[in-house]
Each structure stands twice: as C-alpha cells, then as structure tokens.
View 1 (cartoon, helix red, strand yellow):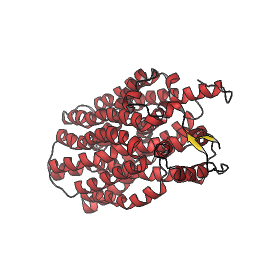
View 2: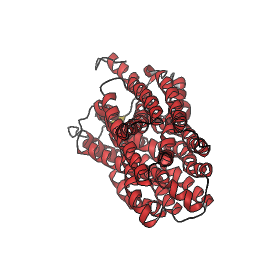
View 3: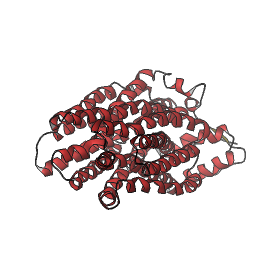
View 4: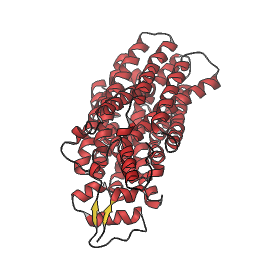
Length: 452
C-alpha cells in the first residue's frame, strides 16, 4: 500500500497527450465564451440603429450581460467546488449559448437585456472553472504558460466575432451573429466525456476508480495498486466555508488587492470591448475599419496572454503583471492622440496585450495564489467582484461618448484604472500564496529550495 499525493504527482508530471486534451477542451470552451462576450460590442452600432437607442441606453444593454457575469462568477465558481467542475462548466456553456442566441431573436431592448443577463450567468461562471481546471492539471513548470495559452482562446473568440461580424452583419443583420452563438450547445456531451473531474472532488466522493484512470494518464509511469490511498495536502482540503478561507492564513489583504485589480482590469477590458468600434467610427473610420481595430485588439491580447504566461513561468508573475498594467496605462492614453495609422494599429495591439492579455495573466496568478480546495471560489469571487467594474465601464464610457468629449479624454478615462491596478498588484503578499507556501514546505522537506 502506498499513499499518493495527487497534486504532487500532477505537479511533477511531464506534458503529454492528457494535458494537451485538457488544454484543447478548455481553450474551445473559452473561445465560445469569448465570442459570446464580444458579439454585443461588435454589433453595438447596428443594434443602436435598429432599436433606436441612445449611447447611454446601449451601455445599459451591454452591461446587462456583465451584471449576469458577476452573479455567475460568484455562484457558479463557488458551487463547482461542491458539484464538480465538469457539470458546472456544462451548465455555463448551455446558459451562454442558448440565451445569446435568444437575444438575437428579439427587437425589444428590455427583452434583449434580459436574455443577455441570463447569458452572462454562463459567461461569467465558466471562467473561474476552466482556470481552476487548467491550473490543477498543468505541470508546475509550465503552469502559467498553460493557463494563459488556454485563456488566449478568449481573444480568439473576440477575433472570430469580429471576422464573422464584418460579413454577417452587412449581409444578414446584427441578429445573425447572435444566432450563431447557439452552436456550441452540441459540445456539451463531449465535454462531459472528455474533461476530467477535479481530483479532490473525486477523493471526497470516493470515486477511486476514476481517479486512478486520471492519474495513469497524467503520469504514465504510475502503476496503481488496489490498496493505494489518495490524499491532497492539508492546505488543499476544505474545512468549513470556502469563502471564509479566502481570508485565512494571511490571505485577506491580498484577496482584497486581487478584487481591486480584477475590478480595474475588467473596467478597461469592457470599456474597450464595448466602445472601441464606436469610438473609432466617431473618429472617422468606416464600420469595416473600426472592426479591424477590434481584430488587432484581440490579436494583441493573444500575444500578451501567451507572452505574459511565458514570462511568468520564468520570472516572478507578480512583477510581470505590474509591468503589464503599467504598459496598459501608457498605450491606452496614447490611443486618444492623433498618430499615423501604422502607429495606431501598434497602440491598439499593445492595448489588447496589456488589458485582455493582462486579465488572463491575472487569472493565472489568482489560480496559483489560492489552495486547490477554494481555487474556483477564490477566482470566482475575484472575477465576480471585478464584474462590477465591467458593469460600470460600458455605462460610464457610454455617458462620455454621449457628451461628445474629445477623443483623448475618453481614452484617458479608460487608462486611469490601469494605474490603480498597478498599485494593487504590487501590494499583493506573494509569500502568503499557495504556490509560495508549497515551495517553502517542500524546501523544508529537502525536496527543493524555496524560491519565495
């Protein structure tokens, strides 16, 4: 009989087909999620014209999905630690696919907002779950890279929405890009079959047969025995309310700093996602050209997410994030000033890398900060609290657009949160993170020297 620490086995595993499969499924889910989220911003000018709504009212319509995302991230992120991540992810996918498609069938702004709110529950709920899933099953040495690579699918979904939007909206109207969002429902049975369940969840429910199959795929060198006992580290076990654990063991202040960073970053992300097309159209660019900026924004996000993850695996993830938030402050501010077109495209790409890309790296850091037992809860609450920034952004920037202020003032308003986020991340107490504590404990055990 041997005692197997399942997370220690997963941490030390070498990348193989199992990890590639988990990465592929999580990336596909995030691509669908990113499409559903970006589609409202892509179609916003056409929706405003078709429904006859003002810029401020359009901001409220966009925010209805973000309001749903706040509740979805908190509730479905927390409940996943109880019912299992696979079922929580499937529920989220069904919600955002069905109700985004339903939004495309209405011509009433209030019904549209209600459908987007329900879709938002799924859009917000899926994010903390796939981050927790990818973090748990990634080998430690490439964990940040794996999470950010997976999450770059969010930007791919945004690019897909922009590409489809350029053709579909002109040919078939704005409803067509919403109806296309219903297709991912067919993936649910395959996701339930292809995604592994969380290992602590399997241990708690004594599903050892399923757990052994997963472990042999994670580490092909492991040969399961009939009497093997499977455990997780003490700090990965649930003891009492998971929400309370976010503030235990010296994590309280850093939890608040994560919430501030998520709020500020999501404000920037949704301000740009919702209004970049309209701001560029107001600056004199055609609809097609304005949508090209959305493509460049999301392409920059992919580069920023993958590059940020690569840097985070080689340097201190906290300081990588500080640099990325500082870059956001500079690049977004410069977007408001008249520069050559080539330079403008570079600035839009940098803005995407340092907002959407930075948000993805922030998710990766939160995944490493919290113990496995409350990882979905920790990420869910940070994302949920941050959604209030996402809710406020379209309304606030919509109000500024309605005031017809100079372009540079709009972009300066979007850049201010980057400065605040830079300060918040710099104040996170990395020594209290689960990854740092684990390194110290392993160092004390003679397995490795702590790098904290």
